Amino acid sequence: MARKIGGLDGGQATLLFYQKLRLEGGGIVEIVIWRLPRATPDRPHGLKYRLYYGRGGKSVVRYDNESGKGDHRHVLNREEPYRFVSVRKLRQDFESDVRRHGGDDDEKTD
Image (tube, one colour):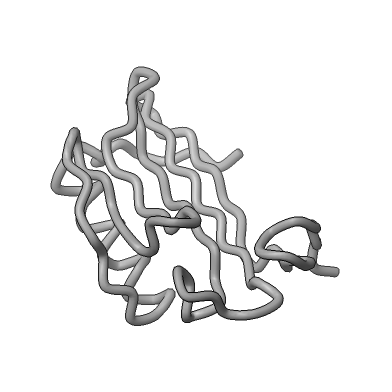
């Protein structure tokens, strides 16, 4: 059964995907995707997401769409808009940035 949480954009959101990986070299990858009860101006695709890669307690790559900012990504110390096309493309772009910025560690799943 899907997990639901209240309060995200005025209703219950459904957790679609959650994964957390601790990498052998000390990195962490965490991916969380929620289906919102309805689309909003900031989230016209009806999803709330956070894809994170960090190492040593610092964020290296993060894709998210917090309220008020819409879809965007953080790479090292830069924040820039992100054009959301699909969940598949989001994952591909995130994984590409992680590889480019030091996420070559072997993975262990939590």
